[in-house]
Amino acid sequence: MPELPEVETVRAGMEMAVCGKAIAEAIVRRSDLRIKVPYNFAESIRGKIVKSLARRGKYIVFEFENDPHEVAILHLGMSGRVRIYAPEDFGLFSLRKHDHIILKMEDNTTLVYEDPRRFGAFFLSRVPGVEKSNNGWRDIFPFDTMGPEPLEESWDGNALYNAVRRRSAPIKTLLLDQRVVAGLGNIYVCEALYAAGINPKHLGKDLAKAKCDALVRELKAVLYRAIEAGGSTLRDYQKTDGSSGYFQYSFHVYGREGLPCMKNGCKGIISRILQGGRSTFYCSTCQK
Ligand SMILES: [Zn+2]
Image 1: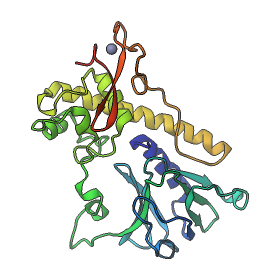
Image 2: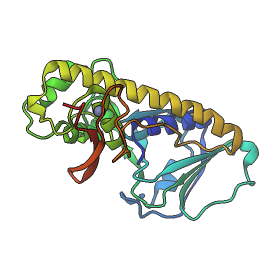
Image 3: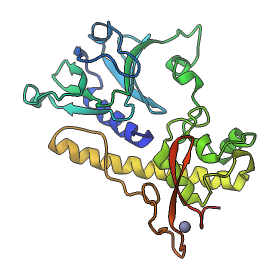
Image 4: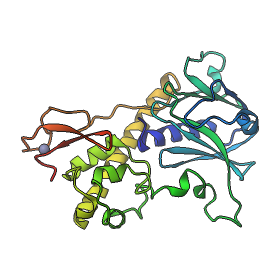
């Protein structure tokens, strides 16, 4: 499932390809995604000039030069990916079974949204005017209830400490709650808890300030490393088939159930438990 670094990689790849260009045509081949693609999506998005692509949590937001009152919002769901075709490839690629939405730009650059499990979403939303809000699209669904961005400088150990100090849920579950902090998913949360040496079952209210500092530091580090890995994979991909999306990243604890802990001097074995219906991988010997 794409998490913040994968979404950021897709965002950066798409932004390079479509910024400053008008959308000449949109084709919706299937509209029954997690949120139904509106019937007028293709008609409404046609002619809009892409100004920039922003990311908030796991969502990508298209801002338009010629329509500041509307944004397009894309979520990759569980299995969504975007293929990007350069103008010179136009007419040379074929569509696949799960290609649901196609955006063709004025110069024939083409974005193809593929999503086998259809848990994703792609829709347009009105942006409130300045008389109603100071933050534009950041004040509309689904961003209005979202917690802070983990890579923002202002999100520090203190911010996390204050967000969880009265919560009796396990820290792992709290970090996956998009209202506590945006964009984190199962993989990178497991990795950061492991790196910080914090037991995922530790309750939010029992987490000392120093532990929160260490956890935030490790979360930012793991996210930056993954974004960097994504960036390099993206460049490689673009040389070959023009697609962007997922990349190779080696995990220290995620998916390693039954294998020895990789920390120097630790003789622990990685276990897997279920928390809130999701698998947590951790080492009970060095994660206290
Ligand atoms: Zn260990």
